Image 1 (cartoon, rainbow, N blue to C red):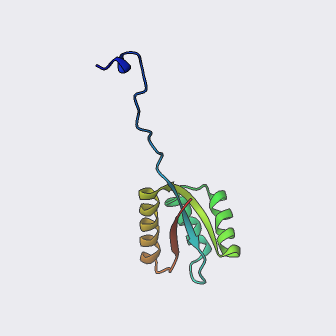
Image 2 (image 1 turned 120 degrees about the horizontal axis):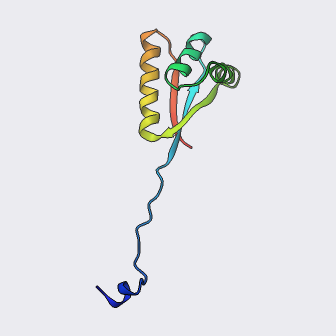
Length: 100
């Protein structure tokens, strides 16, 4: 062991950087029913009915809304699950992922 290490000298520790967070954005369309949007928000994004209804109104009037913020892989997985459910029910509901 070096003399510097024995004295508790200036050993450099690697600083860990927290992973970036990503927003999942839901986009408005003219075909997806409001009830289905609420269902997706409750089932996939684990929102309460009240939160889901509020977000659905935001999407409807603003054209889009952030429906959750997650680590990148989780955000992408939620988009895949929600999109599959929408297509299975023949809705064109669209989501995007953007860095928070």
